[in-house]
Length: 275
Image 1: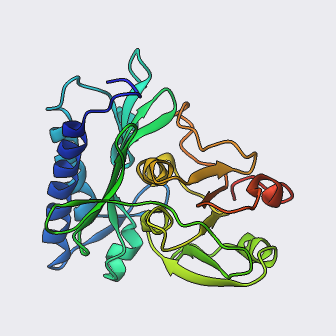
Image 2: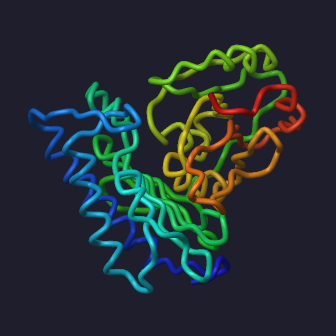
């Protein structure tokens, strides 16, 4: 399972796992559910737990068996295997959106190898849409019919408004400073890793994030963006990395498609320290 040949059947198997977790989430979503608060003050529902259990069980049936870092069981993770591989999972990305019942939440599963996301699946249960990608295969979107349609980032045309997507539940004071540098722009708010996916399929041009995120929030969707022809860069201009999974917080980052802009220069003057 090297970076040059991720088999298509592995991508399909991970999508099936994500959809199974999504079905468990929707079973909770359809009724009354309780909400707890984790040690980090983030919300936790029965849906998070149910999805986590399914994903852990099903990933354990794949070969080779790899370590799993899940948001809901960080303490169970001992590190990557001898080849630098591990699964990185957010069983329910967008728990706040789940609680609000606005449908903007996802199941995120990524395969990491030597710090890079080489396979990513993002499933949106309410929309019944999957975004998925793997190195050597490309990036795709699949609806209820299960048919894979290739997707790609847009190329921004000079003189047109930037289509910017931003977090719905996490307001960022630094975002205003970034937007001032763009000129004309249109802003759309969206929850969970769907923001990445809008850039990947060419619906949005950029997604700047100047607020806290964790590795499991970004890894699956980063693979999709990169395989769709875009980039996910830190304020240094380097790609987001998953080489040190024990440091779970990401730095600030920018997701972008194609354009004539040197984004590393644009963001160089802005803070890169997470708040």
